[in-house]
Image 1 (tube, rainbow over the protein chains, first blue to last red):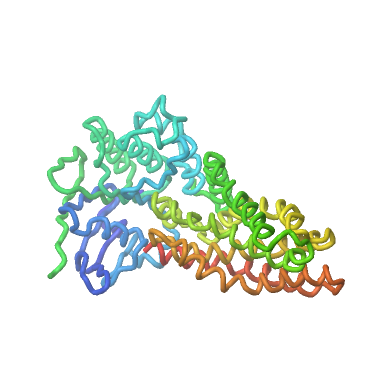
Image 2 (image 1 turned 45 degrees about the horizontal axis):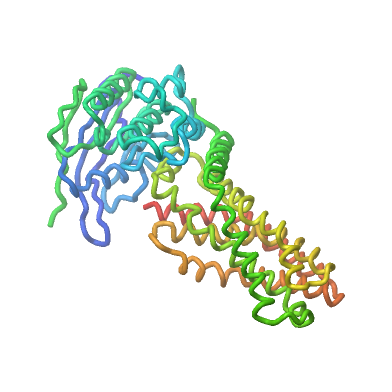
Length: 213
Length: 226
């Protein structure tokens, strides 16, 4: 993974827009993220940040424009993996953090040199590995979901409000995760509703362009 | 290292089996429902053994069909609501394989207990013993097909908050062929006719459902997720 500037962007939106039953949700907007870069998409509640990430992840089909990955239309790059972390962490509340991660690592694979125990420790869930998530706080559930993100061997993270529900130490944890990720050539698109100052190098901000109308 | 589809499938089976085990009380509901309905029939129709025995085959089938609808509602909804469906979709693993795994577990958790219970229901309805063997065989052949059809309907309705009735309205018409041939097979064995033909038709339907069902179900699920 080199960081040369002539490499195609890891993910790129070209005049991307999404409308739900003719009601525009966002766009058309452009964005691009290169290797070793974090893009912070800022916008208020209801500005379409989550929808944008879902379109970028390929979970929703764009109404206009297109998503490109590594210089090719995303549909042709359907095998390129990514992590999408939404408001719901994608974890089962009846299971413990360890049991959940056992599933996500078998689904996504395991990043070389990482381990479930190590990831749980680094997100601060030591001692809570075997407690069903139902009995953990919202912040602790978020930390478990972040651990799943850490373990996935992917270059692109799409994180929807990664700072939500987290305490001050949790904010620093997300900053650290992003920093490590871009240091090894990874990329991330994250969302926040302003007023946040992530301490991450090579961070770019992009305001959410409100849908016309 | 990226993960293979079989590893993902194994992980999913393990996770969902564990989840079922943690909520194992819920697994009893369809079984209790079936037993309850089976005891209602003698109460409603009177204790005259001949009258019950005549309708026993059809009644047993309807009971199993209705009981298997009970647990369908939540088959995919929880995955949709907690975001794990999103995780499966972006993982680049073939969704139809994962869906097939979920259908298999659902069959194991709800259809298999009903199959085991079927002779008891047949006995409660006064069905002669030679019919209950055919009933079990017909259920073994037909329930995978019912699970697949039910899963497709559950996938279609997963994004609706409450879909119990709608789900039944979609599944029941689709289940009619299985019901006709299944009850027909029991009837045939009771009257001494050849039960082989309806059983083979049930098997054919199940083969067809197993071949195409997971693909259909996966596309329905993608629609629900977007």
